[in-house]
Image 1 (cartoon, chains in turn blue, green):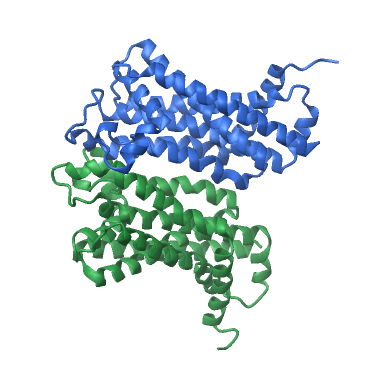
Image 2: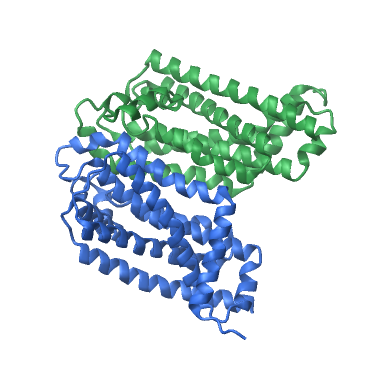
Length: 259
Length: 260
């Protein structure tokens, strides 16, 4: 009898998730379109914002928005995978999976791997569109690697959060609980203008929003002027560690229910 | 009223549609809360845009409020389409086909829920806007005109939802078209007046996009007063949308009935 390692379980599950995705355009296309729509609307429709007095980003409005949309797509790539987990529970597949898996921690890893693969395709498409739109890149190879690495961690944050919800509620009806907090975190960051140009309540909220650190670090990378990047990675990795615990505790709760 | 008369049939289907919509908090709450969240975030995040030379108002909230009505209308499209798709999926439409119910009654009645939702949404968005300091340059008459236009727009998009449902017969397929409808909203003048959009192709797309004129009609009542041209364009686009979508729906219904 073969002994499954967490990695074997993760790989098999990720493979299954990707097959489902490719066989269902209705699951695959919308998550691909949303970032492109956001990018088009923000970079195309709002480029005039760079003329607002005090707008001090050097790299052009297209790259300013590209960073936000890249991180947004990473976070939502994770959340959409959470929908898949909930659907697996609704259809009874996850229950069978819990019984069959020798290493259940591999399930979290498998869903996370699926989220990463899924988002990678979105990231490639988005990057191509941005380059076609003549996005300015001031950063060197290391900076750009830093930007995408940060996005990978944000993708993990999204999937771990959504997995924790999906394991606890085991229903697609919990979808708003997966999406809404992420959506709010994203849009309560400096989306359209740098933090310094926000005023009132949104400035106060954005100043303490961890996503602000990710967006500002990402914009620093792309313009070749890294800004608080160590702090952004520190926050992101701390959040990832906490959310891993959240997801694993959720998995344990799902195991108890399935037993 | 004669039980077989068209108005009676419409009233029966509309009543069912309204009850079904209002009984589902999951259908009713997101269209109310989501546009309001986005309105709060964007009106603060984009406040700096009012410093741009030529920006038509010093309140981005006033400028952005019509977006909520449009976004609510897209939710109405999704609701109307998904509900009808469920009726097709569960065989309700087939059973209805065995009764003397007329196609017109089904189409118009099916929009009842979306219209009810459109009314509730419009009142909520308007109330929130007024509470946060939006003032109408067109006065009380403008408020009424905005409500009429917003409800018509909701009916227009809901008719598109009905058409998609009749074409595909699948709730999932209707939902998957939602991003495409949203795309129309995104490449409009929702965030910036058309003359201030810098990117040429985007400005051209926004100019060709009927959604821009619907938004600009609603917006004109808030920030300009009575702008006959903006209103005429908005009404023409909206009524055109209603007529076109209902016409396409009627054809799709006839085809679906012929198949079943």
